[in-house]
Length: 242
Image (cartoon, rainbow, N blue to C red; front, side, top):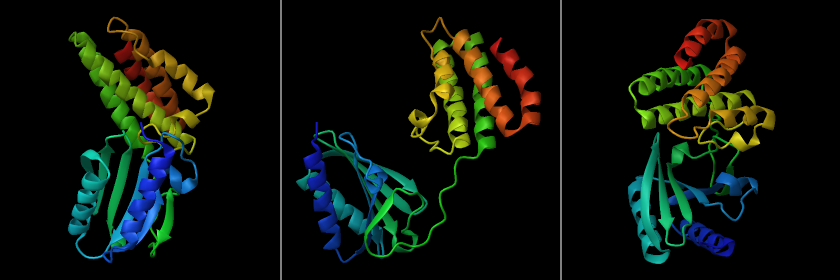
């Protein structure tokens, strides 16, 4: 397990390396540290603006992470033209290094604290579309029913979880909370989250109860988005869960 001191020292080391690299024209702390909200479990999140081809810079920082900082593996997440290289270190610390084209570098969420360089004005990232979440949830509800009828308990359990995930995301959007990756769930009021405890599957012989529970909660969220749509979907959803 890493210590906060090890984490802070590594972050400072990476920022120093970025300042010394003429190809890196800007850097920012992102994630919880940008808001002063990190705790002992937080990872390192840094964003670098790169002039020209970001490939060589990414390769050099990758070499540094393995050679000097005990990286044991990494993966990439690509969003638009930005590569987020996510490293796993031997002490279990996660290090996320984002390499942005210079023209794209800028804040799209409040979790962005500029260290040096110039940040471009960017449109804030929009929340997930509520209607899209509704569509994903009813689609997965159909598959809960068919999975149960086919005797595919594990698949049914997975599909119930997906209906719950999208319904909770709808609740997060409604409360103005982050809806992705469960980031806003623990900030929801307890009167919202407590009923969702009934949607947790207790075993493969206990699929009907959580399916009925999540169906009613899903219908409640649809009603808050589009009452007419809820009138049309509710009877079908309840039939699926009956």
